[in-house]
Amino acid sequence: MAQSGQIDEERLFSRQVLLADVDDTSMARLRAAEVLVVGAGGLGCPVALYLACGGVGRLRWADGDTVDLSNLPRQILFGPQSVGEPKVLAGRAALSALAPLCEVIAEAQHATPQNLPLWIEQAQVVVDCTDQFETRHLINRLCVAARKPLVIASVIQWSGQLLVVDPREASSGCYACLFDPDLGGTDAACGAFGVFSTAAGLMGLMQAHEALRLLMGLPVEAGELRLFDAKRLQTDRVTIAKDPACRVCSG
Image (cartoon, rainbow, N blue to C red):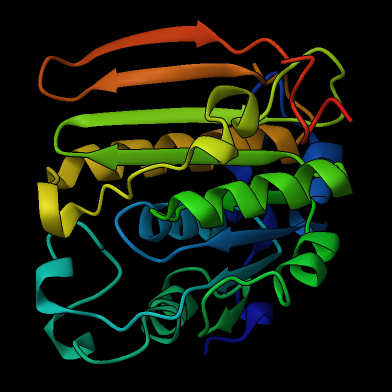
């Protein structure tokens, strides 16, 4: 791993600081932040890449899977030499070369009710890049309880969804307001339905974008479901009102 002392940090992030909405204080917040990213697939790879290169100080990255050859077209931190390796370990090795100022803590295990609470407690923002219905609801529930902002995305075939849940905002809804956890759901794995590689990249990039804005204190539209059609390059949005009967965010 390259020595951080060899890098001119001021010059590295100089283009971001030129923006009217960004200053040394917001960059310092970013550099001091820890982000939890759950999932290291087609969403998690671009999320981790842009968060690490964008200035996040510490990235805790959790995934229990290993790299498969079919992952490579969309999981852009891995190459043929990574096949068979734990995803987060291969990803950490790639990020250590690309973004040595970011400390990457690789958790080569699946997210569970046992390990998630501590990980979420230590993070300023959580990014859900999973494709499991129950895991998404678990992360949502724990983030609401801990009052931690959560950025959720999903992608299948040509379609993507993006939702920011911010429990600090009393009026915005959570993932359970949109999808009732008691009704169950179908896990839409890309291995069964297919996924276009750049559709996953676009949704992961948008997740990283929202997480960076949250960390820097910039305005973020929480409680709005963004719908993206990658085939037609069309977007739509639906406001998710807080459900007064939601057992997760309405008490």
